[in-house]
Image (cartoon, rainbow, N blue to C red; front, top):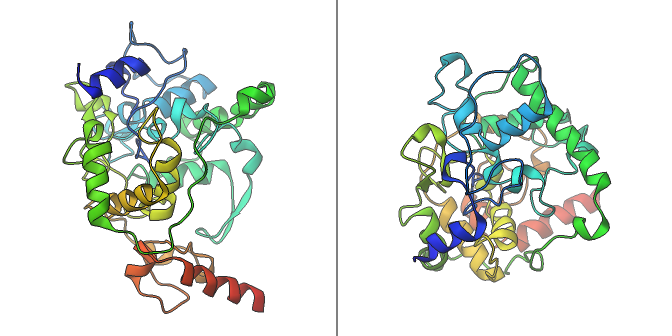
Length: 326
């Protein structure tokens, strides 16, 4: 049995479910909650649109985003994505697993100020940011059944979190990522990818389809290429990607060092992917832009290459001094 087959058996991920990264995207697969299915028999996600925006429909949309809203959706009016990723690709166990990129506490964080938007945002705004960036698609109408259902599901998870015991809330993750004091080494990252990531995401980084039908999405999602996240996504920032990789990858065995996570994140983000238009309109206050943002303009004179791959300590020190002056 191959190492990848062993992982599939270990996590009992149904190929038909189409739950894969998709941050994303950067995940080798997903552990599914019992309500989603098991290897012993998981039905394909129903394509019918319910009359009401239920939390259950919201959960299905997050688990089966590619099938329900992707480019292969039978109804052209419901094709909101150009990628074939699922929200659950990054938000493991459909967002119900504590730790990095959990959705359990979404309700607590909104409304909140977004530097990227330059104003206050709600859960619905965040969903559409993901639709346009991480999913490389278009915004959902705010009054659509899909938007209402996804928002209801995310808000409903707060009750689930409140009911969890203290032990259930604990994360099973290694120590948080710490940024190395150097620029990322993309060649070293390539070697990490080939040794630790390619077995699931493919030597070409284009992922493993959940079945012979592309409409079902990916089991092990693409990390670059036309079906992956675009240049406006949060995962297209090296430090964001490295934090996720260090906490979660390889799935079930997150044993990469800070240096390995840093370098492989840079290698992945240096690969071709869809380009989002009008990114210069992000962050009206340029000083609010993350130090590892992969596109300008910036409120500093550091080169784009350094913003993308480091070293980040000088940029961080510059903005710390800028804040202290205010």
